[in-house]
Length: 303
Image (cartoon, rainbow, N blue to C red; front, side):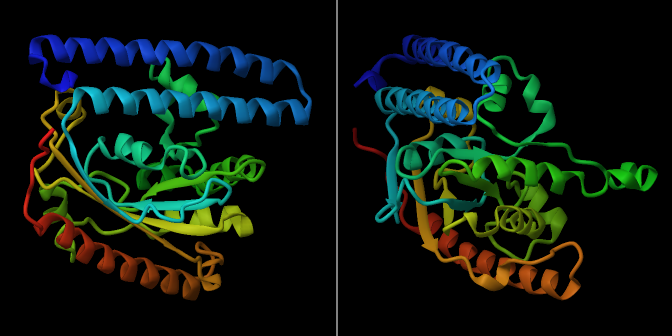
């Protein structure tokens, strides 16, 4: 196991290999994206979209292999049984760390359709990664402050328009749409500032979930509810890369989408109240699951 190499050798080596993996996959991804753009034929573009997803899944698979070789993480996971690659999922998860993303990619890559996240519009400028996310049809969202909306009310609803445009693309291929329900990473300071009624979670933001369900219409088959916990405490991407992260616990639960969850969240106050009640109930259950994941005895990986 390469995880037992001295850190002075192991960390630069894994960083180098991760960077090489980016180049190996991003270059053909960009080339194929260019071919997709210059040939305006619907069937050709659908084929290119499938090939782009295959490149992305290979990229994630290589990252997963590197982390398996260079880290000693003990995984405790339940709920992977019965997941399908031909079903469209809305994946709802709590947000503890940026490590959540590689965790979800490790567990769900090639088990369900390719995961796509809603990203802040500024992230498109991240070198290599931003254009790669754009090429893979990740939706970029531009958030406006209350002050900006007060000065420019015409900007209201732009996020919903962007969501609808993104989801229209998703209907052409199997897709998994990812939503971190809290909208931001959990920290004790944020928890206290919110006065969150949950022990291990921030308050949920129901609007984003409602927008995706409304925009996708009948295009989603199920909700995949995911609880992610790190019993060793808060962690960062550097903790993952350097091998300091030693245990990850995840609980997944697939559930049907109730028909009553589809409606006009912005314009129908009664529907908005019902939807928020459903999300709050989901989050109470999530908090109980988080407690179970975190309070079980901590066990380091043996190999």
